[in-house]
Image (cartoon, rainbow, N blue to C red; front, side):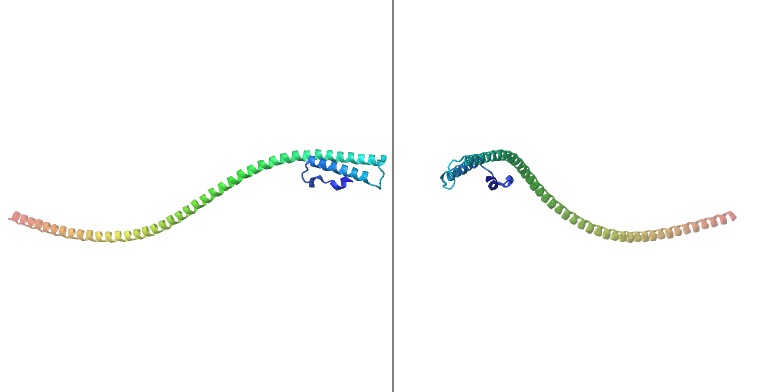
Length: 191
């Protein structure tokens, strides 16, 4: 029977052109009629044979109609799926463009980050060098200030000592003059 040749699993069938399938079915029916009419073994136009051929033809027609309905439903579903696939392809294309933009932006940011890291490392090295120089300079300034302070203190002490000596000399001279004046005044008062 033709049902065994068509199979029951319609999902594995390739796309059917319904017009071609109908023509093929009509050709097979006419071929069967020609074979049955030309056959010498079977009697011509027996009542049983005509009804079985008609029955087979009706079954084929029913099967073809069923396949047409099924094919139309599948074509409709395929059309909806194709539209959805096109929509998804468009979205996928947009997303791929966005991903490409993001990758480009990410690469640019990575390059910028690397440049900033190198700049930061350079600045840190510069800062370390300057801190070392400042520490050295601070130490040398402290030593210089201590030295200058020591020299100035020594000069000041020396000057102060000289002033004290001068003041002591002047004081002694005034005291000796005062004593001599007192001595003269006493000797004059005794006379």
